[in-house]
Length: 373
Image (cartoon, rainbow, N blue to C red; front, top):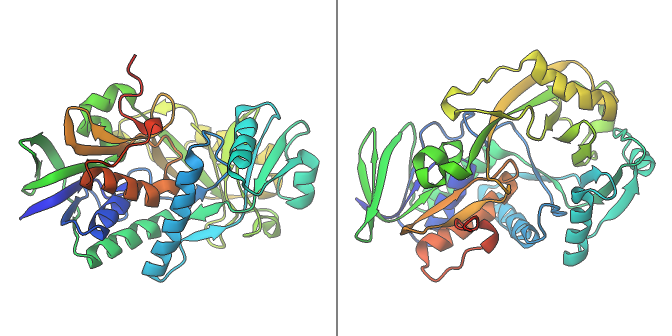
C-alpha cells in the first residue's frame, strides 16, 4: 500500500501528527519503535506542565493557546479528562529573563496575571517557601497534562479515522526523491508522498543533518510523600522557579504517586538514548532534595519513586518544525528542549499542515536554517 504520509516516531508529538494528518483525510502510516505509550523517550511520567505566561518567547503564546483548544477538542473526542488547570507560577529574581519574559508575554497577549513577592506567594499558597528577593508571576490558566493518556487518545482517534499505527518496528533508513519517500524498517518497506520525522532523542541518528545542532540530555524527576499533603492538592499551582540553586519545576501531589519535582537540565549529562542510565543515584536525589529542603520543605518527605527521561536540546532551546531544505517532502518536528509536550496538539496540526499543504508557512522561530550565518 502507498500512503499519503508516513510518520516516524509515535510518541507525544508523533501521535498528534498522525491524528492531524488523518483528520485532514490523509492515508497515514505511523511507525513506532517501542510500545504506545512507552517510557524510553521524553513523554512519560504521568504529568507535563502547560502554561501561558511563556517567558521563553512571546511568539509561543498563540501556539499554546491553540494547543489548549486542541487538547479540549481531544478530550471531547476521547471522552476523558487530559488537562487539569491548577494555575502556574514562574518565579525568580525581578530582573531575570524568566520574570521579564513572563510579564512581557502576559502584557503583550492580555493574559490575566498577578505579580507576587515571596511572602505574598506563601500566604496564597503555603507550600511555597521562596527566599526574600524572588518574585512570582501567577497565571491562573496553567496546569498539567497526562502524557501517556494524551498519546493513547491521539492514537485511538487517529485509528478511528483510518490511520495505521505499527509498534515494535525499528526504522533502518529512509530516502526521498522523485516526489516519493521510502522507509525501510526491520519488518518491511513503505512508500508515501510525504514523510514526517518526530523521532525524539533518536532524531540526530535519523536526520544526521540535524545532529550537530542537537544534544540529548539525561533528566531525572523525583516523587515524594509530602509531610503536609494538604498544602499540595490540586489547588497548588504547577511551577518553574529560577533560584540560586538552579531552575526547578514541579506539580501538585497525586494521591498515589506523590509530589513531583525536577531540576531543569538536572546534572547536565549528555547521553545516548539507547544507553540511558535509568537508575536514580544518590547524586540525582541530592540535586532535587536541595530544592525541596529550601523551597518546599513540607513536601520533603520519603521518596516514593524516581524516573529518568530525555531532553533533546537545540542551541537556543527553540523547536525545529520545518521541511528539510534538500527534501521538501520531508518535515521534521524535534528539538523540543524539555518544554515541548504542552504543544503536542498544536505541533501535530502544524506539522500535518506543512506536510500536506505546500503553501503552508513555517514559523521562523522554528526554522531549520535559523542558525545559518
